[in-house]
Image (spheres, rainbow, N blue to C red):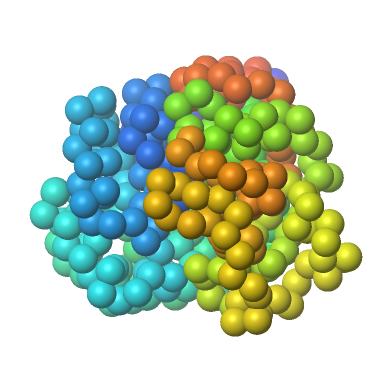
Length: 343
């Protein structure tokens, strides 16, 4: 038997300009410049989570990230969940800043893909179904991220990560990245052995020192078991109806009495439970607690994927990535040599 790889390098690394096929998920509010830079400098691929953020904040984050690393990165936007005027301003500012890669999510918006592709940018698109993957490829994306139901945060599809990844791989020649429930070297190794070009991780990097998540959220991650997560569309304010999220169970999910799905944002109460400076945070909103948040943090959306049970401590992002890679290298592989992974 042999190890999966000495470097774990795949052709995706050459495309993105990173050393390791491990991507930071574009977690809104959490994946700020400090975390993205840490992942980049450790050899992974960083993503700034800028969903619905003001273009001025995007400019500040991009500037700070570039001051902290010279490695390539992407900016994550969500066209389908952003007002058209704001989306236009966000993309305009990114292009003015010379951003060279975008990460999109949720429904495929061909016009947004075409605009940044015409500007010479790379496009990664996270999808939850095979049909969405076809739409993304038809729109001209460069990389497809297959998000399984195990993922934390917003979950678009209902298929397990491996099942969806393999189904998409069967119908495209584009690089496919597996995402959802992957927090350690075992998940990384399994994804690469199934044919994925890399993995994308959210929960594993949320529980790091550089993450912009509140310390309370990070601590809850280290205490949670895999079966403590809940998939629900109750935390839906600010997003389209039916947009489900995976969170650690809390007082809000307990109050649903098992009715986790079927919540209409138009009928949910608007009750302020926390604040970020002068910005109110509502019960049932998609906002998660950040470093700057004060108030009833327990009742907010505490995002976590089903692999959370393997997260036991809060460490620097570089250590989390290094541990993941080291573990993956120790996992034997008795298959014949496979193309795409550097031996």
